[in-house]
Image 1 (cartoon, one colour):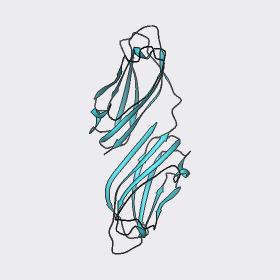
Image 2: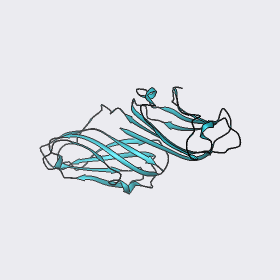
Image 3: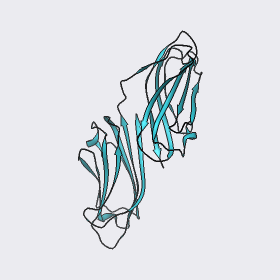
Image 4: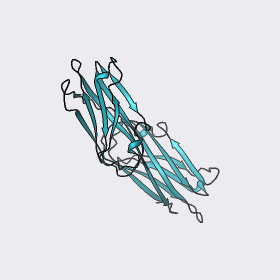
Length: 237
């Protein structure tokens, strides 16, 4: 499962050792397989700045330390190489970015920052309802992060002997429903697919927080299968 959370804050960077901090709170308690962060700040004297990311367990990584950057904007991504200290840890808790400014006379802003994570897939699987059934299998995921959706993806992993029997839909917390796939794939076995932001643009602008549901209907007899796992990758405005 992939997770992405962005904070657009335009927070003034305080000229002190304590500096300015902002928090992304994660409710999901999963093992981190991969992690990256992207930071956008503006300041005329980047050589006066120190920036670090602090995890829920108190471990921290220095992202920037009094290094001169050309221009007044520092827009940079940090991958698993820089953030390897967090790989393998649990995600739940407060993730804090801190920017301190030891200079005087210059004003800067932490404009936005983004945290991206890849979690271990859940081993849990769900059995399909019987063939040719009137009702669909419904599985729910809860998003605890408030904010409007900028874009999103949906990852689905289904084991089935005849994918062409299946109809899949995604339903948002507000009740908006998008058909992801309807009886295509014919006799193909298994479905492991990522539905892209283009497939899910109907949800753009809606609130992300709440219960998201995926519906799987097997309308024809003989072949059965399992919903192994599924997940959402939501980018907020």
